[in-house]
Image (cartoon, rainbow, N blue to C red; front, side, top):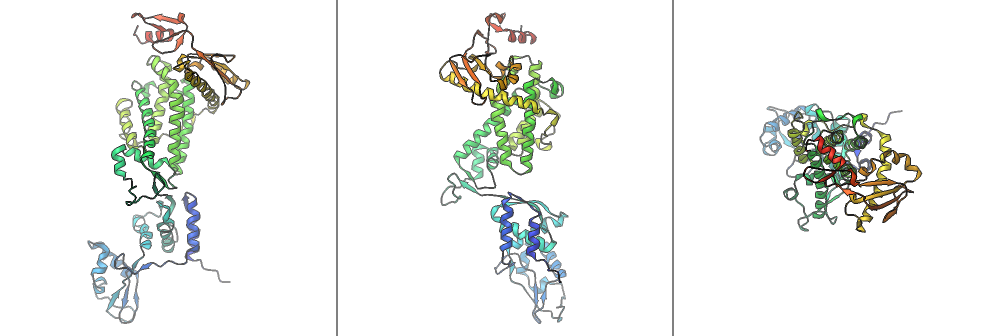
Length: 519
């Protein structure tokens, strides 16, 4: 039985299966279009375009379409200032090799084909000129709007399979379209067009870049003044976090002052471990071209784990302890890792901000870094810093902190306190968390950013049930003792020391000032 010959359609459908379509819905879209496409007319009856370089013998009608003639005409096009315009400006005799005769009848009179190539054939064959001429077999990716499943993506597929028996790309990524804030297409008649240059002039290029990755680009995305203001606020929070990191590393030399992992305080080891998980996820999102998920993860990390927890708790240690103390160097070691991670992870998105940050780092912290952030590798996750057991401990402690913060907010609303340092917190712990919390009793006031913590019975002017930690009760009253003017924390009066200028400071601050040579 004679084997059935494969068609261009069946070969193209096989090649579709070999391509990675981003998003996956692109696969179904182009496959159904190719399956149901009736035909493809590659010519157009137009006055001007890319010519079909075929000649006809006036005597016998023979079609002159051999490789030798094509190559001859192509060289003429390459040498002509206006390229393919030569076809329309010269006669058939001038375009053919001198003395050329019809291979069938020997005639010397010819006429040119007047039709032009379909523009989709024109663009679909572009890979041959762009890639094949450079010895590149396939493009890593084709990138365009979702309407190109019917256009460029499909014409490239069909032309590639017809000419070279394979599709000319490894991946295809498609994006949606830009709409105004009301979800309408932009048009001059509606007056809703947002010009990129106007956005750059008002907000800066990084805000425009940030907007492009803040939403899922595979869908239609909106832009307008409200959207841009929200993006600008996200940017401000990230920039301020980077400023905080830089500001607290001014006296830190990572080559000399950084501590080893085992020398870090527990809270710093937790952040260092947690950071590696974030970095790993961001890398995965970048690899999958899910830029909006990469940015949203970084944004959530900056707002939640950094600003609201780690940096908030760290301020006391950074500002109170002597510059070269273990407490401060431990914190700075992790701040350095955070700075390098954020700067390099954000570089593809906030390119100008990342470069600006990099130059500050090179000038004031580590001078032997590459000249530009774009000449270094992105921060890689370091498995040796992971401590998943410690991360589980802090899952509990962070839930505890949320419940305490809720009680502190209630105390603030009742005007019992103005600042968390003015509070004493009472914790009535359920059995399930005692083994985690009790060994860290002395550390709790600093972790919860209050002056005192007492574990036992929840009491005070405010008492709330835990929402994050079931069975927990949190009580809040005003802190006991005297407020230290240097660290703002309340301690028993007998723990204070007199300074030469007559001020009294707590024992911790007195020791720090003495080590620093101030007293």
